[in-house]
Amino acid sequence: MSNKQITNRAALIAVVMAFVVGMIGSLAVRPVSKAANLATASANPGGEESVRVDWYMPITAQTNLPVVGDNPVYFTEAMAAASNGAVRLNVSEPNEIVPPFSITDAVRDGKLAVGYTWLGYDQGKIPASPLIAAVPFGMEPWEYSAWWFHGDGRELTEALYKKYNIHPIYCGMTGPETAGWFRNKIDSLEDVQGLKIRFAGLGGRVMERLGASVTMIPGGEIFQALEKGAIDASEYALPIVDQSLGFNRIAKFNYFPGWHQPFTANHLVVNLDKWGELRAQDQALIEMGCTAAVTRNLAQAEATQGAVIAGFEDIGVTAGILPEPLLRELQRVSEEVLEEEAARDADFALILASQRAFRAEYAQWKSRAYLPRDF
Image 1 (cartoon, rainbow, N blue to C red):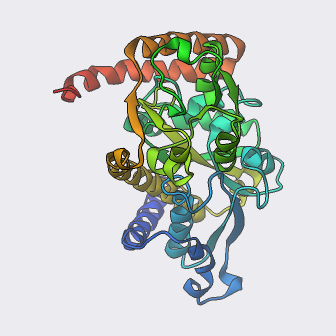
Image 2 (image 1 turned 135 degrees about the vertical axis):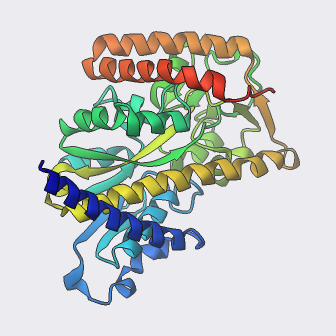
């Protein structure tokens, strides 16, 4: 690329960024609304002829769920406002177009141009995908962002999904999930053995290794499975999300910490051919909108959990801490699972090595710069 091309590209990005920041700032004071996806017509006085992107975007969690469901709606609002209605990403609820676990398949095959998903759902067909979504005893949220933007995270993920004709964009982040909602107390490893539990990602492999019977079902089906006794326990998301789904009405023991998902990253997945057809301005707009969504999503997730936990006593829920011997055993088995997966899949090994190297270097800062959590 010539110096002139670099200068022109930098100027374009600067102009777009200034516009996006201004528009997204105005959105921050508005409540997230699903109806915003239909508001692009009024935001676009030029009419249909000026619409450059008009895609349906399936998501994995219902839009009425806080944090996990409303973040993709926020993102689409930002795109509509910042583009003056020229970039329309129309949110589709889970199962309206495709099942939640089939979003990347539909995007890969060109049936859909875009989707918003948790890449850990691709574990069965892309073994390395859980490393991009959530790693047991892995990075904390800001650490993951540092690895994504300034380590090898973005490049490795793009290379991994390029094989499947998909362009992935980091577009959402929350802090740790809960360790799960349980009907009965968990005091030791024996309490895990024989437990029927819904569990996702690499954490599910760990729970199976420790004797639990693991099933994988979408978030919208968990309450019914708990209610009917098909499962004894479930992990899914944050306390505010799980309580919105009614888990607390059946499972009265909510355990912490979220050892299996210290970070939970969500991504926009775009069909690679469709992505290549976009003008550079729209690519930059979408990527910056996703970066804004990451920041807003993590802030919302961190801000809203304390009040929910504070209210547990009033509804008969116990917020428990898993005993350290059990956590140590979970950690030991997690390392076994990671090593076994790395031995089986070259992409898994490459990404795991990158994350471990980044964490080792980051620890030089992390171990010194921050106060101990029990200070």
